[in-house]
Image 1 (cartoon, rainbow over the protein chains, first blue to last red):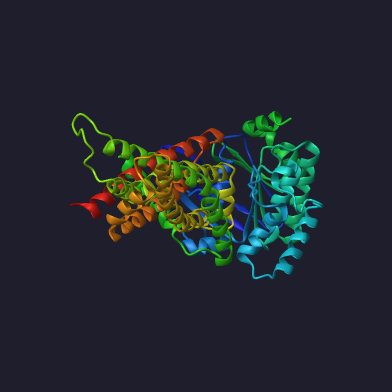
Image 2: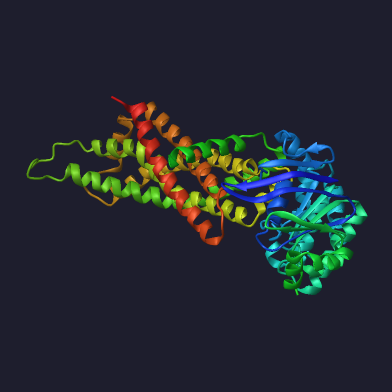
Length: 243
Length: 254
Protein backbone atom coordinates (compact mmCIF):
# COMPACT_ATOMS: atom_id res chain seq x y z
CA UNK A 1 0.00 0.00 0.00
CA UNK A 2 1.14 3.54 -0.75
CA UNK A 3 -0.06 6.48 1.28
CA UNK A 4 0.46 10.12 0.36
CA UNK A 5 0.22 12.78 3.03
CA UNK A 6 0.12 16.56 2.48
CA UNK A 7 2.22 16.43 -0.67
CA UNK A 8 3.27 19.76 -2.18
CA UNK A 9 5.55 20.32 -5.13
CA UNK A 10 6.97 23.66 -6.22
CA UNK A 11 9.11 24.46 -9.25
CA UNK A 12 10.86 27.70 -8.29
CA UNK A 13 7.98 30.06 -7.47
CA UNK A 14 5.29 27.96 -9.18
CA UNK A 15 3.28 25.46 -7.16
CA UNK A 16 2.36 22.35 -9.13
CA UNK A 17 0.85 20.07 -6.46
CA UNK A 18 -1.29 21.32 -3.59
CA UNK A 19 -1.64 19.26 -0.41
CA UNK A 20 -2.32 15.86 -2.01
CA UNK A 21 -3.61 13.20 0.40
CA UNK A 22 -4.58 9.74 -0.77
CA UNK A 23 -4.03 6.02 -0.45
CA UNK A 24 -3.38 3.38 -3.11
CA UNK A 25 -4.29 -0.21 -2.24
CA UNK A 26 -2.74 -3.39 -3.69
CA UNK A 27 -4.62 -5.60 -6.14
CA UNK A 28 -6.67 -2.64 -7.37
CA UNK A 29 -6.32 -0.57 -10.55
CA UNK A 30 -5.63 2.89 -9.11
CA UNK A 31 -6.03 5.60 -11.71
CA UNK A 32 -4.75 9.17 -11.55
CA UNK A 33 -6.62 11.20 -14.13
CA UNK A 34 -6.58 14.80 -15.22
CA UNK A 35 -5.91 17.08 -18.16
CA UNK A 36 -2.40 17.60 -19.57
CA UNK A 37 -0.48 19.90 -17.25
CA UNK A 38 -2.70 19.15 -14.25
CA UNK A 39 0.23 17.68 -12.31
CA UNK A 40 -0.45 13.95 -12.54
CA UNK A 41 2.94 13.13 -14.10
CA UNK A 42 4.65 15.27 -11.46
CA UNK A 43 2.76 13.29 -8.79
CA UNK A 44 3.94 9.96 -10.20
CA UNK A 45 7.52 11.23 -10.59
CA UNK A 46 7.48 12.38 -6.96
CA UNK A 47 6.23 8.95 -5.92
CA UNK A 48 9.05 7.06 -7.67
CA UNK A 49 11.67 9.57 -6.59
CA UNK A 50 12.45 11.12 -9.97
CA UNK A 51 11.37 14.46 -8.47
CA UNK A 52 11.75 15.54 -4.88
CA UNK A 53 8.54 16.81 -3.26
CA UNK A 54 8.74 20.17 -1.52
CA UNK A 55 6.62 19.00 1.41
CA UNK A 56 4.73 15.93 2.58
CA UNK A 57 5.17 12.19 2.98
CA UNK A 58 5.06 9.24 0.60
CA UNK A 59 4.66 6.07 2.63
CA UNK A 60 5.49 2.69 1.08
CA UNK A 61 4.05 0.46 3.78
CA UNK A 62 5.45 2.21 6.84
CA UNK A 63 8.59 3.63 5.20
CA UNK A 64 8.61 7.30 4.24
CA UNK A 65 10.29 7.26 0.84
CA UNK A 66 11.34 10.91 1.01
CA UNK A 67 13.25 10.67 4.26
CA UNK A 68 14.94 7.34 3.45
CA UNK A 69 18.72 7.31 3.08
CA UNK A 70 20.07 6.94 -0.47
CA UNK A 71 20.90 3.22 -0.23
CA UNK A 72 17.57 2.34 1.42
CA UNK A 73 15.80 4.32 -1.25
CA UNK A 74 17.66 2.35 -3.95
CA UNK A 75 16.71 -0.92 -2.24
CA UNK A 76 13.03 0.10 -2.10
CA UNK A 77 13.15 1.07 -5.76
CA UNK A 78 13.96 -2.54 -6.61
CA UNK A 79 10.40 -3.34 -5.57
CA UNK A 80 9.08 -0.74 -8.02
CA UNK A 81 8.38 -1.24 -11.71
CA UNK A 82 7.53 1.56 -14.07
CA UNK A 83 6.02 1.69 -17.52
CA UNK A 84 7.07 4.96 -19.13
CA UNK A 85 5.06 7.05 -21.55
CA UNK A 86 7.79 6.64 -24.20
CA UNK A 87 8.50 3.06 -23.04
CA UNK A 88 12.14 3.90 -22.13
CA UNK A 89 13.37 0.58 -23.47
CA UNK A 90 17.15 0.33 -23.74
CA UNK A 91 17.59 0.69 -27.47
CA UNK A 92 20.98 -1.03 -27.63
CA UNK A 93 19.52 -4.20 -26.07
CA UNK A 94 17.21 -6.77 -27.64
CA UNK A 95 13.74 -7.44 -26.23
CA UNK A 96 14.94 -10.34 -24.09
CA UNK A 97 18.04 -8.44 -22.95
CA UNK A 98 15.78 -5.56 -21.86
CA UNK A 99 13.71 -7.91 -19.71
CA UNK A 100 16.80 -9.74 -18.48
CA UNK A 101 18.48 -6.45 -17.47
CA UNK A 102 16.93 -6.02 -13.97
CA UNK A 103 17.41 -9.76 -13.32
CA UNK A 104 21.08 -9.56 -14.28
CA UNK A 105 21.56 -6.51 -12.07
CA UNK A 106 19.68 -7.54 -8.95
CA UNK A 107 18.86 -11.24 -8.85
CA UNK A 108 21.08 -14.15 -7.93
CA UNK A 109 19.52 -16.32 -10.62
CA UNK A 110 21.66 -18.49 -12.89
CA UNK A 111 21.62 -17.66 -16.64
CA UNK A 112 19.21 -20.59 -17.21
CA UNK A 113 16.83 -19.40 -14.48
CA UNK A 114 16.96 -15.88 -15.88
CA UNK A 115 16.16 -17.13 -19.35
CA UNK A 116 13.22 -19.05 -17.95
CA UNK A 117 11.97 -15.95 -16.10
CA UNK A 118 12.35 -13.80 -19.26
CA UNK A 119 10.32 -16.30 -21.25
CA UNK A 120 7.69 -16.44 -18.50
CA UNK A 121 7.36 -12.63 -18.53
CA UNK A 122 7.14 -12.56 -22.32
CA UNK A 123 4.45 -15.22 -22.28
CA UNK A 124 2.62 -13.35 -19.53
CA UNK A 125 2.38 -10.24 -21.70
CA UNK A 126 1.53 -12.42 -24.71
CA UNK A 127 4.56 -11.44 -26.73
CA UNK A 128 6.05 -14.13 -28.91
CA UNK A 129 8.72 -14.29 -31.62
CA UNK A 130 10.24 -10.97 -30.61
CA UNK A 131 13.00 -12.12 -28.25
CA UNK A 132 15.88 -11.24 -30.52
CA UNK A 133 14.40 -8.04 -31.95
CA UNK A 134 15.53 -4.55 -30.99
CA UNK A 135 13.01 -1.96 -29.72
CA UNK A 136 13.30 -0.05 -33.01
CA UNK A 137 12.07 -3.14 -34.86
CA UNK A 138 8.79 -3.67 -32.97
CA UNK A 139 5.43 -1.87 -32.91
CA UNK A 140 4.16 0.57 -30.26
CA UNK A 141 1.89 -2.04 -28.67
CA UNK A 142 4.74 -4.56 -28.53
CA UNK A 143 6.99 -1.96 -26.91
CA UNK A 144 4.36 -1.45 -24.18
CA UNK A 145 4.26 -5.20 -23.60
CA UNK A 146 8.06 -5.33 -23.35
CA UNK A 147 7.90 -2.40 -20.91
CA UNK A 148 5.39 -4.29 -18.76
CA UNK A 149 7.43 -7.52 -18.98
CA UNK A 150 10.57 -5.64 -17.89
CA UNK A 151 8.66 -3.99 -15.03
CA UNK A 152 7.46 -7.34 -13.67
CA UNK A 153 10.72 -9.25 -14.30
CA UNK A 154 11.71 -8.80 -10.67
CA UNK A 155 8.96 -9.68 -8.25
CA UNK A 156 7.78 -6.13 -7.73
CA UNK A 157 5.26 -4.80 -5.22
CA UNK A 158 4.50 -1.49 -6.92
CA UNK A 159 3.82 -0.72 -10.56
CA UNK A 160 3.59 2.81 -11.98
CA UNK A 161 2.30 3.41 -15.47
CA UNK A 162 2.62 6.83 -17.05
CA UNK A 163 0.06 7.15 -19.85
CA UNK A 164 0.24 3.49 -20.88
CA UNK A 165 -2.13 4.10 -23.80
CA UNK A 166 -0.33 7.01 -25.41
CA UNK A 167 0.23 6.42 -29.10
CA UNK A 168 -1.80 3.22 -29.23
CA UNK A 169 -4.92 2.43 -31.25
CA UNK A 170 -8.16 1.90 -29.24
CA UNK A 171 -8.06 -1.87 -29.53
CA UNK A 172 -4.44 -2.21 -28.38
CA UNK A 173 -5.14 0.35 -25.62
CA UNK A 174 -7.88 -1.89 -24.27
CA UNK A 175 -5.64 -4.97 -24.42
CA UNK A 176 -2.86 -3.13 -22.52
CA UNK A 177 -5.37 -1.83 -19.92
CA UNK A 178 -6.66 -5.32 -19.24
CA UNK A 179 -3.18 -6.77 -19.16
CA UNK A 180 -2.26 -4.24 -16.45
CA UNK A 181 -5.35 -5.10 -14.42
CA UNK A 182 -4.75 -8.86 -14.78
CA UNK A 183 -1.13 -8.51 -13.64
CA UNK A 184 -2.18 -6.27 -10.74
CA UNK A 185 -4.62 -8.87 -9.45
CA UNK A 186 -2.49 -11.92 -10.21
CA UNK A 187 0.58 -10.63 -8.33
CA UNK A 188 -1.34 -8.43 -5.86
CA UNK A 189 0.66 -5.37 -6.91
CA UNK A 190 -0.12 -1.78 -5.96
CA UNK A 191 -0.63 -0.36 -9.43
CA UNK A 192 -0.99 3.33 -10.21
CA UNK A 193 -1.96 4.26 -13.73
CA UNK A 194 -1.69 7.78 -14.97
CA UNK A 195 -4.20 8.43 -17.73
CA UNK A 196 -6.35 11.01 -19.44
CA UNK A 197 -8.27 8.43 -21.42
CA UNK A 198 -11.86 8.29 -20.15
CA UNK A 199 -12.43 4.93 -21.85
CA UNK A 200 -9.69 3.47 -19.66
CA UNK A 201 -11.23 5.10 -16.61
CA UNK A 202 -14.67 3.64 -17.26
CA UNK A 203 -13.25 0.27 -18.21
CA UNK A 204 -10.75 -0.50 -15.43
CA UNK A 205 -10.88 2.34 -12.88
CA UNK A 206 -11.55 0.79 -9.50
CA UNK A 207 -10.04 3.67 -7.55
CA UNK A 208 -9.83 7.00 -9.35
CA UNK A 209 -8.25 10.30 -8.36
CA UNK A 210 -9.07 13.35 -10.47
CA UNK A 211 -6.33 15.99 -10.35
CA UNK A 212 -7.35 19.49 -11.34
CA UNK A 213 -4.78 22.31 -11.40
CA UNK A 214 -2.54 20.39 -9.01
CA UNK A 215 -5.25 19.62 -6.46
CA UNK A 216 -7.05 16.39 -5.70
CA UNK A 217 -10.46 17.44 -6.96
CA UNK A 218 -12.36 14.20 -6.72
CA UNK A 219 -11.80 10.60 -5.60
CA UNK A 220 -13.98 7.54 -6.12
CA UNK A 221 -14.70 4.49 -8.27
CA UNK A 222 -15.84 4.12 -11.89
CA UNK A 223 -19.41 3.48 -10.76
CA UNK A 224 -19.49 6.83 -8.94
CA UNK A 225 -17.85 9.03 -11.56
CA UNK A 226 -20.96 9.32 -13.76
CA UNK A 227 -23.01 10.56 -10.82
CA UNK A 228 -20.23 12.77 -9.46
CA UNK A 229 -19.80 14.72 -12.66
CA UNK A 230 -23.30 16.12 -12.34
CA UNK A 231 -22.25 18.11 -9.31
CA UNK A 232 -18.60 18.64 -10.26
CA UNK A 233 -18.20 21.04 -13.18
CA UNK A 234 -14.45 20.50 -13.68
CA UNK A 235 -14.83 16.72 -13.66
CA UNK A 236 -17.77 17.01 -16.05
CA UNK A 237 -15.77 19.17 -18.48
CA UNK A 238 -12.89 16.69 -18.39
CA UNK A 239 -15.33 13.80 -18.85
CA UNK A 240 -17.07 15.36 -21.85
CA UNK A 241 -13.85 16.53 -23.50
CA UNK A 242 -12.59 12.94 -23.51
CA UNK A 243 -15.22 11.77 -25.99
CA UNK B 1 28.29 33.06 -11.25
CA UNK B 2 27.01 30.73 -13.93
CA UNK B 3 30.46 29.15 -14.22
CA UNK B 4 30.65 28.60 -10.47
CA UNK B 5 27.22 26.93 -10.33
CA UNK B 6 28.18 24.78 -13.34
CA UNK B 7 31.39 23.68 -11.60
CA UNK B 8 29.35 22.93 -8.46
CA UNK B 9 26.92 20.84 -10.47
CA UNK B 10 29.82 18.99 -12.09
CA UNK B 11 31.34 18.19 -8.66
CA UNK B 12 27.97 16.88 -7.42
CA UNK B 13 27.61 14.84 -10.60
CA UNK B 14 31.06 13.32 -10.08
CA UNK B 15 30.14 12.50 -6.49
CA UNK B 16 27.39 10.26 -7.86
CA UNK B 17 29.57 8.91 -10.68
CA UNK B 18 32.46 7.81 -8.49
CA UNK B 19 30.52 5.08 -6.72
CA UNK B 20 31.28 1.39 -6.53
CA UNK B 21 29.56 -0.28 -9.51
CA UNK B 22 26.34 -2.19 -8.74
CA UNK B 23 27.64 -5.38 -10.34
CA UNK B 24 31.32 -5.76 -11.27
CA UNK B 25 30.66 -8.26 -14.07
CA UNK B 26 28.19 -5.94 -15.82
CA UNK B 27 30.48 -2.95 -15.24
CA UNK B 28 33.49 -4.60 -16.90
CA UNK B 29 31.40 -5.88 -19.78
CA UNK B 30 30.24 -2.33 -20.53
CA UNK B 31 33.76 -0.96 -19.94
CA UNK B 32 35.28 -3.35 -22.50
CA UNK B 33 32.65 -2.29 -25.05
CA UNK B 34 33.46 1.35 -24.32
CA UNK B 35 37.21 0.65 -24.65
CA UNK B 36 36.53 -0.64 -28.13
CA UNK B 37 34.39 2.37 -29.06
CA UNK B 38 36.76 4.94 -27.56
CA UNK B 39 40.06 3.26 -28.41
CA UNK B 40 39.90 0.92 -31.38
CA UNK B 41 37.36 3.04 -33.25
CA UNK B 42 39.64 6.08 -32.94
CA UNK B 43 42.87 4.45 -34.12
CA UNK B 44 42.41 5.34 -37.78
CA UNK B 45 41.81 9.04 -37.18
CA UNK B 46 44.78 9.17 -34.79
CA UNK B 47 47.02 7.48 -37.39
CA UNK B 48 46.00 10.01 -40.06
CA UNK B 49 46.23 13.09 -37.86
CA UNK B 50 49.55 12.16 -36.25
CA UNK B 51 51.32 11.06 -39.43
CA UNK B 52 50.30 14.13 -41.41
CA UNK B 53 50.96 16.54 -38.54
CA UNK B 54 54.43 15.01 -38.00
CA UNK B 55 55.27 15.34 -41.68
CA UNK B 56 54.01 18.92 -41.94
CA UNK B 57 55.76 20.00 -38.73
CA UNK B 58 59.07 18.58 -39.99
CA UNK B 59 58.80 20.23 -43.40
CA UNK B 60 57.82 23.61 -41.95
CA UNK B 61 60.48 23.56 -39.22
CA UNK B 62 63.14 22.58 -41.75
CA UNK B 63 61.98 25.33 -44.06
CA UNK B 64 62.24 27.96 -41.34
CA UNK B 65 65.57 26.87 -39.89
CA UNK B 66 67.51 25.61 -42.89
CA UNK B 67 66.55 27.98 -45.69
CA UNK B 68 69.05 30.87 -46.06
CA UNK B 69 67.48 34.30 -45.66
CA UNK B 70 68.57 37.95 -45.82
CA UNK B 71 69.23 37.90 -42.09
CA UNK B 72 71.15 34.58 -42.14
CA UNK B 73 72.53 34.24 -45.66
CA UNK B 74 74.31 30.96 -44.90
CA UNK B 75 72.90 27.99 -43.06
CA UNK B 76 74.28 28.01 -39.52
CA UNK B 77 71.83 25.73 -37.78
CA UNK B 78 72.89 22.08 -37.41
CA UNK B 79 70.33 19.77 -39.03
CA UNK B 80 69.68 17.70 -35.91
CA UNK B 81 68.02 20.78 -34.37
CA UNK B 82 65.02 20.05 -36.59
CA UNK B 83 64.73 16.64 -34.95
CA UNK B 84 65.09 18.22 -31.51
CA UNK B 85 62.27 20.68 -32.23
CA UNK B 86 59.94 18.12 -33.83
CA UNK B 87 60.64 15.45 -31.19
CA UNK B 88 60.12 17.76 -28.24
CA UNK B 89 57.02 19.45 -29.62
CA UNK B 90 55.54 16.03 -30.49
CA UNK B 91 56.06 14.73 -27.00
CA UNK B 92 54.99 17.86 -25.16
CA UNK B 93 52.23 19.29 -27.29
CA UNK B 94 51.30 17.66 -30.57
CA UNK B 95 50.72 14.12 -29.31
CA UNK B 96 48.70 14.88 -26.16
CA UNK B 97 47.01 18.20 -26.96
CA UNK B 98 46.31 18.03 -30.68
CA UNK B 99 45.25 14.37 -30.47
CA UNK B 100 42.92 15.11 -27.55
CA UNK B 101 41.40 18.13 -29.31
CA UNK B 102 40.58 15.82 -32.21
CA UNK B 103 39.30 13.11 -29.84
CA UNK B 104 37.14 15.73 -28.08
CA UNK B 105 35.26 16.14 -31.36
CA UNK B 106 34.94 12.43 -31.99
CA UNK B 107 34.50 10.86 -28.56
CA UNK B 108 33.11 13.87 -26.66
CA UNK B 109 30.29 14.59 -29.10
CA UNK B 110 29.48 10.88 -29.28
CA UNK B 111 29.23 10.43 -25.49
CA UNK B 112 27.22 13.64 -24.98
CA UNK B 113 24.69 12.77 -27.65
CA UNK B 114 24.42 9.12 -26.56
CA UNK B 115 23.71 10.01 -22.93
CA UNK B 116 21.58 13.02 -23.97
CA UNK B 117 19.46 10.75 -26.10
CA UNK B 118 19.08 8.30 -23.20
CA UNK B 119 18.01 11.20 -21.01
CA UNK B 120 15.33 12.59 -23.32
CA UNK B 121 13.96 9.11 -24.08
CA UNK B 122 13.60 8.44 -20.31
CA UNK B 123 16.13 5.57 -20.30
CA UNK B 124 18.09 7.35 -17.56
CA UNK B 125 14.85 7.63 -15.53
CA UNK B 126 14.27 3.91 -16.10
CA UNK B 127 17.66 3.12 -14.52
CA UNK B 128 16.84 5.37 -11.56
CA UNK B 129 13.43 3.80 -10.97
CA UNK B 130 15.07 0.37 -11.03
CA UNK B 131 17.32 1.49 -8.19
CA UNK B 132 20.46 1.88 -10.30
CA UNK B 133 22.73 4.87 -9.80
CA UNK B 134 22.25 6.06 -13.39
CA UNK B 135 25.03 8.69 -13.33
CA UNK B 136 27.57 6.07 -12.34
CA UNK B 137 26.13 3.30 -14.51
CA UNK B 138 26.33 5.27 -17.76
CA UNK B 139 29.40 7.41 -17.02
CA UNK B 140 31.92 5.41 -15.00
CA UNK B 141 32.61 2.76 -17.70
CA UNK B 142 33.25 5.58 -20.19
CA UNK B 143 35.67 7.34 -17.84
CA UNK B 144 37.57 4.13 -17.04
CA UNK B 145 37.68 3.17 -20.72
CA UNK B 146 38.91 6.67 -21.60
CA UNK B 147 41.61 6.61 -18.94
CA UNK B 148 42.89 3.30 -20.32
CA UNK B 149 42.56 3.90 -24.06
CA UNK B 150 43.26 7.62 -24.61
CA UNK B 151 46.83 7.48 -23.15
CA UNK B 152 47.46 4.47 -25.42
CA UNK B 153 46.24 6.49 -28.42
CA UNK B 154 48.52 9.36 -27.42
CA UNK B 155 51.56 7.07 -27.19
CA UNK B 156 50.70 5.71 -30.66
CA UNK B 157 50.29 9.30 -31.91
CA UNK B 158 53.71 10.21 -30.56
CA UNK B 159 55.44 7.45 -32.49
CA UNK B 160 53.48 8.31 -35.62
CA UNK B 161 54.37 11.99 -35.39
CA UNK B 162 58.06 11.04 -35.58
CA UNK B 163 57.27 8.51 -38.31
CA UNK B 164 55.48 11.25 -40.26
CA UNK B 165 58.64 13.36 -39.91
CA UNK B 166 60.76 10.47 -41.19
CA UNK B 167 58.44 10.12 -44.19
CA UNK B 168 58.78 13.85 -44.84
CA UNK B 169 62.59 13.53 -44.71
CA UNK B 170 62.52 10.93 -47.47
CA UNK B 171 60.72 13.47 -49.65
CA UNK B 172 63.27 16.25 -49.05
CA UNK B 173 66.94 16.48 -49.87
CA UNK B 174 67.91 18.91 -47.11
CA UNK B 175 67.23 16.58 -44.14
CA UNK B 176 67.71 12.87 -43.49
CA UNK B 177 65.80 10.57 -41.19
CA UNK B 178 69.00 10.05 -39.17
CA UNK B 179 69.30 13.81 -38.56
CA UNK B 180 65.71 13.87 -37.32
CA UNK B 181 65.97 10.87 -35.00
CA UNK B 182 69.39 11.90 -33.69
CA UNK B 183 68.01 15.35 -32.81
CA UNK B 184 64.94 13.90 -31.12
CA UNK B 185 67.12 11.56 -29.02
CA UNK B 186 69.61 14.27 -28.06
CA UNK B 187 67.09 16.49 -26.32
CA UNK B 188 64.87 13.77 -24.87
CA UNK B 189 64.29 14.05 -21.11
CA UNK B 190 62.23 11.63 -18.98
CA UNK B 191 60.38 14.70 -17.69
CA UNK B 192 58.84 15.20 -21.15
CA UNK B 193 57.40 11.71 -20.98
CA UNK B 194 55.97 12.46 -17.55
CA UNK B 195 54.38 15.67 -18.88
CA UNK B 196 52.89 13.80 -21.84
CA UNK B 197 51.41 11.06 -19.66
CA UNK B 198 50.07 13.56 -17.11
CA UNK B 199 48.39 15.48 -19.88
CA UNK B 200 46.99 12.33 -21.45
CA UNK B 201 45.33 11.14 -18.24
CA UNK B 202 43.91 14.58 -17.38
CA UNK B 203 42.64 15.16 -20.92
CA UNK B 204 41.12 11.66 -21.02
CA UNK B 205 39.23 12.41 -17.84
CA UNK B 206 38.08 15.80 -19.18
CA UNK B 207 36.87 14.35 -22.50
CA UNK B 208 34.82 11.55 -20.95
CA UNK B 209 33.51 13.24 -17.81
CA UNK B 210 32.59 16.63 -19.31
CA UNK B 211 30.79 15.06 -22.26
CA UNK B 212 28.88 12.68 -19.98
CA UNK B 213 27.96 15.58 -17.69
CA UNK B 214 26.68 17.62 -20.63
CA UNK B 215 24.62 14.69 -21.93
CA UNK B 216 23.25 13.75 -18.51
CA UNK B 217 21.66 17.16 -17.96
CA UNK B 218 20.08 17.40 -21.41
CA UNK B 219 16.41 18.31 -21.39
CA UNK B 220 14.05 18.59 -24.34
CA UNK B 221 14.35 16.66 -27.58
CA UNK B 222 16.51 15.90 -30.59
CA UNK B 223 17.55 19.55 -31.05
CA UNK B 224 18.82 19.79 -27.46
CA UNK B 225 20.72 16.51 -27.87
CA UNK B 226 22.58 18.07 -30.81
CA UNK B 227 23.23 21.23 -28.81
CA UNK B 228 24.56 19.12 -25.91
CA UNK B 229 27.08 17.50 -28.27
CA UNK B 230 28.29 20.88 -29.54
CA UNK B 231 28.47 22.37 -26.05
CA UNK B 232 30.40 19.35 -24.78
CA UNK B 233 33.05 19.67 -27.51
CA UNK B 234 33.41 23.43 -26.90
CA UNK B 235 33.81 23.00 -23.14
CA UNK B 236 36.25 20.11 -23.49
CA UNK B 237 38.43 22.12 -25.91
CA UNK B 238 38.48 25.11 -23.56
CA UNK B 239 39.35 22.97 -20.54
CA UNK B 240 42.01 21.01 -22.45
CA UNK B 241 43.75 24.26 -23.43
CA UNK B 242 43.40 25.64 -19.90
CA UNK B 243 44.87 22.51 -18.27
CA UNK B 244 47.53 22.35 -20.99
CA UNK B 245 48.73 25.76 -19.81
CA UNK B 246 48.57 24.80 -16.14
CA UNK B 247 50.52 21.54 -16.65
CA UNK B 248 53.15 23.30 -18.77
CA UNK B 249 53.51 25.95 -16.10
CA UNK B 250 53.76 23.39 -13.30
CA UNK B 251 56.26 21.01 -14.93
CA UNK B 252 58.29 23.14 -17.29
CA UNK B 253 58.61 26.48 -15.49
CA UNK B 254 62.23 27.52 -16.03
